[in-house]
Image 1: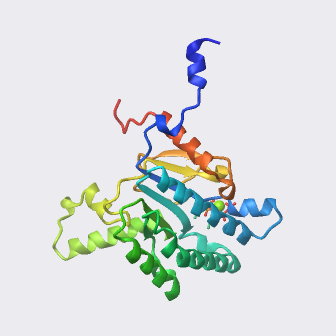
Image 2: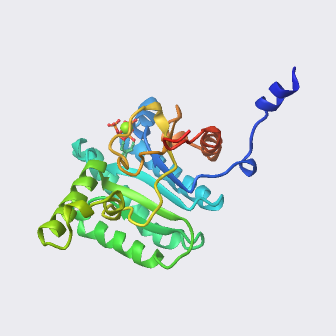
Length: 248
Ligand code: IPE
Ligand code: IPE
Ligand code: MG
């Protein structure tokens, strides 16, 4: 076999590549995973929550600075009550343990999305986790709960319009930077890589503004089956992409 071909086929490893600073993951495929096993959808969510713990820790271990995971969208309220109740219970269980769990990894927890829809109990757990972790210096983990990219933009537009109506801002002063500063991800870099397991080729309202130049990696594996090796594969695929940002 010609030498160059051999070289091309050699597996790259993480130590050879530049890692993205910010990864987004659309944690999709829990329901199909459960269905394949004849289990209720909630069993898929329980398995998916375990995968989330494993992958978040792995991202932190390999030095990712920001990880944003899509846990519940503004559209997911359309699901049957039983499934939503199971998801809310899972969030509660997770947040109760996250307070101690991520301490050793120095992970900073943030929640993005409209919190007003959650129970007071869940809300106080979210606040507690953010307060407890805000002084840590490790990976920032954004959990998108009741998050929708369109809703996020509407909230930003309302806030900017209010400032204009109050006379503290002129319409011509509205810039891309100002819009970014009015989003939940204020102060954070845009995602470089967005991974969508389960094979669906759509954004489903995830980080619409922030993903303008993100590289998408769609993978056929269902989220509960997603492993550290799948993340490695996505990182290596990302490293091969030629990002031009409109240039040449
Ligand atoms: C993602 O898995 C989890 C949430 C949206 C909460 P799904 O529940 O969407 O799984 P599929 O897409 O039906 O397989
Ligand atoms: C996106 O997945 C939301 C989350 C993973 C939390 P969905 O399963 O809700 O997306 P669609 O309905 O397939 O677009
Ligand atoms: Mg889905």
